Image 1 (cartoon, rainbow, N blue to C red):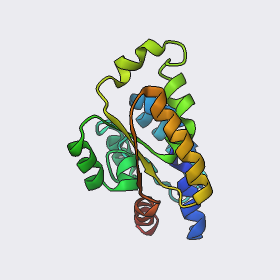
Image 2 (cartoon, rainbow, N blue to C red):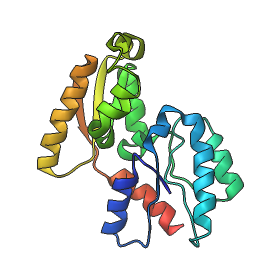
Image 3 (tube, rainbow, N blue to C red):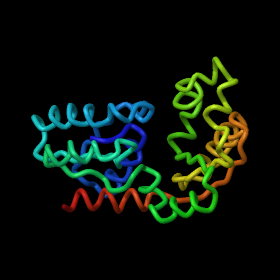
Image 4 (cartoon, helix red, strand yellow):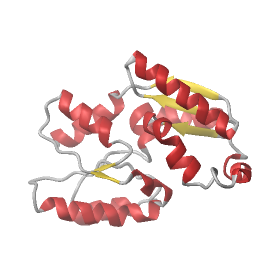
Amino acid sequence: MACGAIAQPAAEVSARHTWPIDVHPLNPLLHNAPGRIPGEVERLVTELRERYDRVVVGYADCGTYGALDEVCERLAVERLPGLHCYDLYAGAERVQAAFEDEPGTYLLTDFLVKSFSRTVIQELGLDRWPELRDDYFGHYTRIVWLQQTEDADEQAELRELAQRAAERIGLPLQVRHTGLTGLERALAGLVEA
Protein backbone atom coordinates (compact mmCIF):
# COMPACT_ATOMS: atom_id res chain seq x y z
CA MET A 1 0.00 0.00 0.00
CA ALA A 2 1.27 3.48 -0.72
CA CYS A 3 0.78 7.14 -0.15
CA GLY A 4 -1.37 8.50 -2.95
CA ALA A 5 1.30 11.09 -3.70
CA ILE A 6 3.88 8.42 -4.66
CA ALA A 7 1.60 5.60 -5.82
CA GLN A 8 1.89 6.35 -9.55
CA PRO A 9 5.71 6.65 -9.62
CA ALA A 10 5.96 3.55 -7.41
CA ALA A 11 3.78 1.62 -9.86
CA GLU A 12 5.90 2.88 -12.79
CA VAL A 13 9.13 1.77 -11.12
CA SER A 14 7.61 -1.60 -10.22
CA ALA A 15 6.40 -2.16 -13.78
CA ARG A 16 9.80 -1.23 -15.23
CA HIS A 17 11.44 -3.85 -13.00
CA THR A 18 8.59 -6.35 -13.54
CA TRP A 19 8.29 -6.73 -9.77
CA PRO A 20 5.17 -8.69 -8.81
CA ILE A 21 3.62 -5.75 -6.98
CA ASP A 22 0.15 -4.28 -6.81
CA VAL A 23 0.07 -0.70 -5.54
CA HIS A 24 -2.93 0.27 -3.41
CA PRO A 25 -2.94 4.03 -2.70
CA LEU A 26 -4.42 5.96 0.18
CA ASN A 27 -5.82 9.44 -0.37
CA PRO A 28 -2.93 11.92 -0.76
CA LEU A 29 -4.98 14.56 1.05
CA LEU A 30 -4.13 12.70 4.26
CA HIS A 31 -0.98 14.84 4.24
CA ASN A 32 -3.17 17.75 5.27
CA ALA A 33 -4.08 15.73 8.39
CA PRO A 34 -1.02 13.53 9.09
CA GLY A 35 -2.46 12.40 12.41
CA ARG A 36 -4.89 10.28 10.39
CA ILE A 37 -2.18 8.51 8.35
CA PRO A 38 -1.30 5.78 10.90
CA GLY A 39 -4.92 4.70 11.35
CA GLU A 40 -5.59 4.65 7.61
CA VAL A 41 -2.38 2.71 6.98
CA GLU A 42 -3.38 0.18 9.64
CA ARG A 43 -6.84 -0.20 8.14
CA LEU A 44 -5.53 -0.81 4.61
CA VAL A 45 -2.67 -3.10 5.68
CA THR A 46 -5.15 -5.21 7.66
CA GLU A 47 -7.49 -5.37 4.66
CA LEU A 48 -4.72 -6.23 2.19
CA ARG A 49 -3.27 -8.98 4.38
CA GLU A 50 -6.34 -11.05 3.63
CA ARG A 51 -5.43 -11.08 -0.09
CA TYR A 52 -1.61 -10.90 -0.21
CA ASP A 53 1.28 -12.92 1.18
CA ARG A 54 3.21 -9.77 2.00
CA VAL A 55 2.28 -6.13 2.48
CA VAL A 56 4.73 -3.23 2.73
CA VAL A 57 4.04 0.41 3.47
CA GLY A 58 4.93 2.93 0.78
CA TYR A 59 5.09 5.91 3.12
CA ALA A 60 7.89 7.85 4.71
CA ASP A 61 7.07 9.25 8.17
CA CYS A 62 5.06 12.05 6.47
CA GLY A 63 4.58 14.18 9.57
CA THR A 64 3.33 11.41 11.87
CA TYR A 65 6.27 11.96 14.26
CA GLY A 66 6.88 8.25 14.76
CA ALA A 67 3.23 7.16 15.03
CA LEU A 68 3.45 5.43 11.64
CA ASP A 69 6.52 3.53 12.83
CA GLU A 70 4.57 2.32 15.87
CA VAL A 71 1.82 0.97 13.60
CA CYS A 72 4.35 -0.68 11.28
CA GLU A 73 6.16 -2.28 14.21
CA ARG A 74 2.93 -3.57 15.74
CA LEU A 75 1.79 -4.99 12.38
CA ALA A 76 5.31 -6.29 11.56
CA VAL A 77 5.45 -4.50 8.19
CA GLU A 78 8.25 -2.46 6.69
CA ARG A 79 7.89 1.08 5.37
CA LEU A 80 9.91 3.30 3.09
CA PRO A 81 12.75 5.18 4.80
CA GLY A 82 12.88 8.89 5.47
CA LEU A 83 10.92 11.71 6.99
CA HIS A 84 8.92 12.48 3.84
CA CYS A 85 8.77 11.70 0.13
CA TYR A 86 11.20 14.54 -0.56
CA ASP A 87 13.88 12.39 1.09
CA LEU A 88 12.97 9.53 -1.25
CA TYR A 89 13.32 11.67 -4.36
CA ALA A 90 16.22 13.99 -3.56
CA GLY A 91 17.94 12.18 -0.69
CA ALA A 92 17.78 13.26 2.94
CA GLU A 93 21.14 15.04 2.79
CA ARG A 94 20.17 17.08 -0.25
CA VAL A 95 16.83 18.07 1.31
CA GLN A 96 18.52 19.01 4.57
CA ALA A 97 21.07 21.09 2.65
CA ALA A 98 18.25 22.95 0.86
CA PHE A 99 16.64 23.79 4.22
CA GLU A 100 19.96 24.84 5.73
CA ASP A 101 20.81 26.95 2.68
CA GLU A 102 17.45 28.70 2.84
CA PRO A 103 15.20 27.74 5.79
CA GLY A 104 12.15 29.26 4.07
CA THR A 105 12.10 26.58 1.37
CA TYR A 106 8.76 25.11 0.27
CA LEU A 107 9.21 21.85 -1.64
CA LEU A 108 7.13 20.48 -4.50
CA THR A 109 7.17 17.09 -6.20
CA ASP A 110 5.72 16.32 -9.63
CA PHE A 111 2.55 15.15 -7.87
CA LEU A 112 2.24 18.44 -5.97
CA VAL A 113 2.90 20.47 -9.11
CA LYS A 114 0.09 18.63 -10.92
CA SER A 115 -2.34 18.85 -8.01
CA PHE A 116 -1.35 22.21 -6.49
CA SER A 117 -4.70 23.90 -7.14
CA ARG A 118 -6.54 21.09 -5.37
CA THR A 119 -4.14 19.94 -2.65
CA VAL A 120 -2.85 23.35 -1.62
CA ILE A 121 -5.03 26.20 -2.90
CA GLN A 122 -8.45 24.59 -2.38
CA GLU A 123 -7.55 22.53 0.70
CA LEU A 124 -6.07 25.55 2.49
CA GLY A 125 -8.99 27.73 1.43
CA LEU A 126 -6.83 30.16 -0.54
CA ASP A 127 -9.30 30.05 -3.43
CA ARG A 128 -11.95 31.46 -1.10
CA TRP A 129 -9.80 33.53 1.28
CA PRO A 130 -6.67 34.69 -0.57
CA GLU A 131 -5.81 36.94 2.37
CA LEU A 132 -4.68 33.76 4.19
CA ARG A 133 -1.68 33.58 1.86
CA ASP A 134 0.58 35.37 4.34
CA ASP A 135 -0.64 33.22 7.23
CA TYR A 136 0.42 30.08 5.37
CA PHE A 137 3.35 31.24 3.27
CA GLY A 138 4.57 34.48 4.86
CA HIS A 139 7.78 32.91 6.14
CA TYR A 140 8.65 31.04 2.97
CA THR A 141 11.21 32.57 0.63
CA ARG A 142 11.24 30.17 -2.33
CA ILE A 143 9.70 27.10 -3.91
CA VAL A 144 12.00 24.28 -4.94
CA TRP A 145 10.46 21.80 -7.33
CA LEU A 146 12.10 18.37 -7.02
CA GLN A 147 11.47 17.30 -10.60
CA GLN A 148 11.09 13.56 -11.12
CA THR A 149 9.96 13.27 -14.74
CA GLU A 150 12.51 12.50 -17.44
CA ASP A 151 10.12 13.21 -20.33
CA ALA A 152 10.93 16.57 -21.98
CA ASP A 153 7.32 17.31 -22.99
CA GLU A 154 6.05 16.54 -19.50
CA GLN A 155 8.86 18.61 -17.98
CA ALA A 156 7.76 21.62 -20.06
CA GLU A 157 4.11 21.14 -19.10
CA LEU A 158 4.94 20.73 -15.41
CA ARG A 159 7.31 23.69 -15.50
CA GLU A 160 4.38 25.90 -16.51
CA LEU A 161 2.27 24.49 -13.68
CA ALA A 162 5.12 24.90 -11.18
CA GLN A 163 5.64 28.50 -12.27
CA ARG A 164 1.92 29.15 -11.91
CA ALA A 165 1.97 27.63 -8.41
CA ALA A 166 4.92 29.79 -7.40
CA GLU A 167 3.24 32.92 -8.74
CA ARG A 168 0.02 31.98 -6.98
CA ILE A 169 1.72 32.17 -3.60
CA GLY A 170 4.21 34.87 -4.57
CA LEU A 171 7.50 32.96 -4.34
CA PRO A 172 10.38 32.48 -6.76
CA LEU A 173 10.70 29.01 -8.30
CA GLN A 174 13.84 26.88 -8.49
CA VAL A 175 13.95 23.50 -10.21
CA ARG A 176 16.18 20.63 -9.12
CA HIS A 177 16.03 17.45 -11.14
CA THR A 178 15.95 14.32 -8.98
CA GLY A 179 14.47 11.63 -11.19
CA LEU A 180 13.11 8.47 -9.58
CA THR A 181 16.42 6.85 -8.62
CA GLY A 182 16.02 7.41 -4.87
CA LEU A 183 12.48 6.06 -4.84
CA GLU A 184 13.60 3.16 -6.99
CA ARG A 185 16.39 2.26 -4.53
CA ALA A 186 14.03 2.49 -1.56
CA LEU A 187 11.43 0.29 -3.27
CA ALA A 188 14.10 -2.23 -4.25
CA GLY A 189 15.08 -2.40 -0.59
CA LEU A 190 11.52 -3.30 0.35
CA VAL A 191 11.03 -5.75 -2.52
CA GLU A 192 14.30 -7.57 -1.93
CA ALA A 193 13.93 -7.75 1.87
